[in-house]
Length: 375
Image (cartoon, rainbow, N blue to C red; front, top):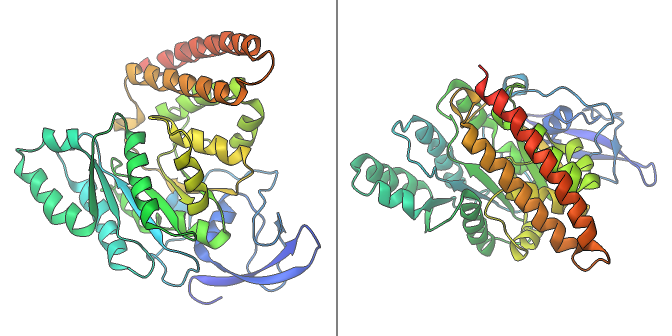
């Protein structure tokens, strides 16, 4: 093994032939953390779904945080494939402390300088954010001297964060090519903390996994404890509703990730083209993309981001919890109708599912209110 790269021997599940192929440490650690059987060395044996694509093992490994993985030293210059297009979603509400954003744009400056591997980053900024801070000198200086210096600012009017994703990913897509990968980076996490700085140092592995393993979609999963509000919402709200409206797809999604609404992901050009041309939702778009990926038998992987957070002490107001659960239900209803409105007897099936969904939503909100108000 030389540097950060090595070789693995793959056994094809189709013809049982062995092939030695190069693999970067980014891809290697992604495989290990996802529970895939993979070993560096000429005589290694591993189960792959066809040549070059990892197949998750039935036994699932424990979730590992950033401190348990191999440290990365920065974006690689030798990975094969197209360019990576970073798309930063600037916080809707400007924080008074710029330390997190300064750390984030330190990474963006590094990416912007590596023109052989990365397209010029795009920063999506809601115009409401701009006008709210139009008289603030610190904001204007940071926007001009840091954000605009290291990225192309896309000023847009948006109804929700997912519309900011749509604008940014769409703009990057129009500049990209068939082999390119598009990398969404949320701007409102605690990147200035010790773990945040560490996460930033290895976050580039997320899109590089797609290039290395020829995946279509890679979702980043943050590590949280069982009392974290986002985990509780996904357990009692998101997945419970998914099992009602899309049970088969939900089972497959649960094998991939515990965070179907993650704000960290990367997507290949072809799959992004598909989802951009379809209906885009103003909220819970990651969940929609996962559903489409599972339904379309796309190649999906998971990347452990680390223990970073966009919530103070991992909690948020119950009113916000209610909105998240209710809008998830609305999206799932709309998706189900779009796929079944031509079926015979769809109306009766919908009424049954809707009744069940209401019970699930009400029960989830009782559980979430009790857990949110406790402690």
